[in-house]
Length: 274
Image (cartoon, rainbow, N blue to C red; front, side, top):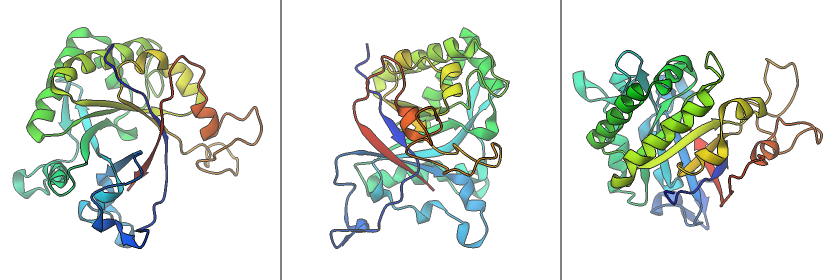
């Protein structure tokens, strides 16, 4: 075993800007000893007016881990790639987001900064096809190692949405474990962090994940505990309810975290998404 630990956490959480009369800008990082994972959504830079959120607006003192979201998968070469070169890279007068986020560790040395791959817009099928083929998986893993080394990220967050769903296939459940295992084996010598964002719906969890096996290799498991209700289900309900409307209601954070598996829950963590 790799001695890894699995942590389930909940989105979203609002933090106050003042702590004991001291601004968080004056603090090197959170003082509560918990893991606070902050997903940094680069597409927020394209929001209009007051909705706009850029890297300069980020307060890294709130977080222990920053996750740059998202990189993507080149389905022809089976390698990790930038999804928005102008935001991510410095070439052609780009905004150099990769290096700017990693550079925050100089001022906030407590931070770990990782890169997420995937997201809703990336879909599922191309990840399914890559994970099925050992040669394609190997090429992908090697590309990730080169990518992390080049941009000095501390690790990778897998955000395949979702194995066996959204044009994925049932075999994804097994292949996803193989992909995670091979990434972890490659990461171990360099101490890279390996995490994954997993869907929190019961149907998705049952179809997509072998949690007891994934927990052997993932440092943290990020449960996406939001969007339980929306216009699609015709129910007026909370976006991220702590508990369900009844004992049979599985659309809640409580139901998602009470997974029936041998996966051990070590501690709790919270994330913010900008």
